[in-house]
Image (cartoon, rainbow, N blue to C red; front, side):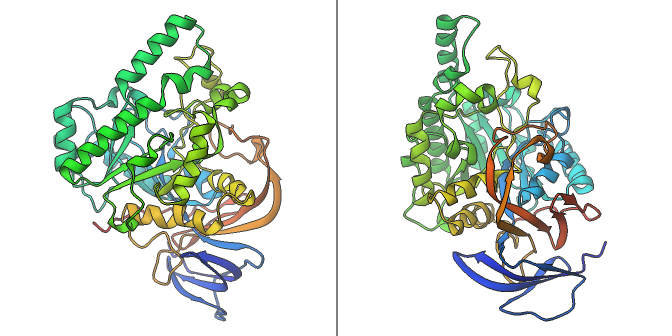
Length: 447
């Protein structure tokens, strides 16, 4: 289907650390011109005066639950929520049912994405203790990465076989993305909690059971393996002050072989919030004490951490309401509200909009070597977000697009909101309305 032309007039473009009031002309999926004034006919003209014009967000870690867990979410519902929040490209995790552990199962998810996703998409290949051969067949130009769970967050995908880990780190043609929590540490802490509390372990024990020590031990192992084999390693959802020193900030991102991601919920909440939000903020790795939260933002600002993401992981309200600690699942629905949460920090003076764009748009494109995305440059794919910084609104059930219908920030009063989202050159979202005649594109990688 023809994508046609779009002219965005008079917005404040935020790109490559600079702001300029300018027009953007989009043709057949790509940004054709950026200039102070563009006067040419277009199929659609958008007046962006008073608004920020941003590159589309690239979220490198989401769980959209399809196949097998679609009572929680599916690729269509969650990608719709993504574009409503300014995320134009996502990279989705393999721990579905069945897990993406073969090339055939991985391709099945790409087929679903092509059919239903309004956002651009990529899906990780999964690793297990016994699928090394399948993992090594993955095409690095067509798949975002290889996901290794070095902690039992996801059941049967725990990779703890030393020989398998060594084989993956030494042979993988892909970027390796890791969930790092030490399984033995978690089990010992859980046993201690059960001995103390019996069957009534409170959720306030979650950051003690899934402790900072467990995160540091696992992250250190992953980095040791990556250094041994010169592997391209990306460690997901760093949650502790202890781990900051594992990462470098003295070389450009393009030169890093080991990079780190921090998530919006770890930048926002601390352990005190379990008292009011309970299981709604239970996630793995855990949201921890304020001393850890306070260390994460400075590490992001000084480039020890490279990327902001969500780890969007929806569960139903009923699942989250379970009183048995071990039966209440970990994970938060976040992909619709990641920019909102970061802009709240911007309004508090904690981070600049330029830095948000760098960490949510530019840096993921660099880390994953995404082909022609992440910037508002001529010749790039036209992934564009028009953000109104003055609109006041409240997060409520009638404007939450997740299939589960709830958010940990429900009730927040916000100033600033995504107005329109353009995906690969077509208008995908406009003030509550979705345009899904044209789907997103499969991401490609320059590797």
